[in-house]
Picture 1 (cartoon, rainbow, N blue to C red):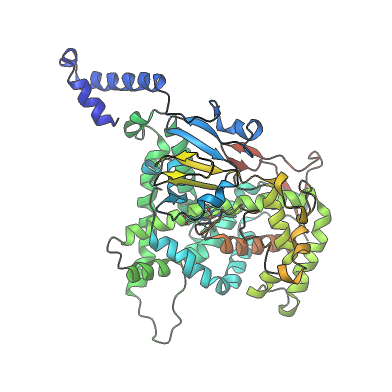
Picture 2: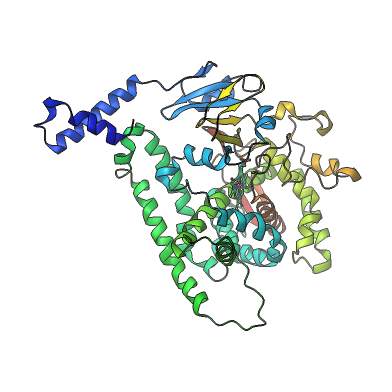
Length: 494
Ligand code: HEM
């Protein structure tokens, strides 16, 4: 029931007629809270984990059994991996990954429930088509960032990767999202990275409130208030650049400008999207940064932890980087990234052990869906598949639980498989970027960014853990998300 409906019901109670509006509001809150405690969400006839979704990873037989986690927003259904194959043929208006993600973060309130063909087209088509153009630019940006933001590391220096890499990834991504010089604008970088944190934190805090109370509670939660401010700030920061571009006369023979601002504007024109304006452009920039920056940063942190924990990989990885860039004296070019097969393999193995989530395939049923085992998914239900599948690793890939950084490198030595098993390849056995038509469209870009940043670090620094760290730091879970611990890594300039 909506809050307005609840208010109407209460107003019809004669005993409340004399109560002041403030007291009525308090009464509404109490009634809503009490009804929230009484009400248990509609359950499915499958095992239930009542408590915390964090527990299911350890306790539920997620591989073979369908089970549910009850949340105030209704049950979340967890499916064995095989059902991803059954859901894959459904189109996005029938089974939507974006809607599932938006619901998980209360997108209606946190503003991320915003599906845009302009944004998807700009990433899927324009960004992917032009990836090769930016390798030099991004490398330059990464190098500038390390030179200006990083300690000198003449001797072993402890580095907080979470903090440092946020800046590096944000700036390297902004080089392509908003172009130069905007990519070096501190305020823009702060705004575009903070938005994601406000969405995550604000959404989590709002979830603690009963759904009926959220329309009010959103105004009490600082991060929820900041989200609105973030949008306005993004627009204000972007306007000088947009005005400059709108008024600037470019030579007729000048190469077309290539960055996400340009692509979004052109896509909107092509699609005849009348609602697209500067405000929408700023919003889409924030959404793109949200999808891109924190995921990429996390993948790099995991990879660096894996390298620091297994120093025997440093020499062969460095050797490969040196070898492939020999023809250009160490300057990275597009083809070099494809040639870095050992690094690619190491990144994929690192992601196999530390995926972004144990359920990277999630969909909201936009229509009722029946699975082959007779399980009925009603419209509006969120389902997620178990994609945490070390045990189910195909036999041909070798020992499933071992960390074998070059397993995919060796698999690709088979001439038939040379284009398979890449970091950005998705398959039923490798769903870290999702699966099917709606798998992550930014994965090729992410692959490039990660390679550029890791190869910069490996070529300029030695890294290791402090002596007190005896093994690779353990990951921890937040709901279905796999998070990296906050362990410092020591850097020393070569
Ligand atoms: C290592 C970095 C990244 C990881 C691990 C990652 C992971 C994912 C996953 C698991 C999905 C859901 C796919 C599915 O449901 O089948 C997804 C979707 C998405 N990602 Fe990424 N991502 C990364 C980087 C990026 C980047 C750099 C961008 C943008 C440039 C991006 C943009 C998107 C978008 C727009 C979607 C929604 C796609 C749709 O609904 O069609 N991601 N990502």
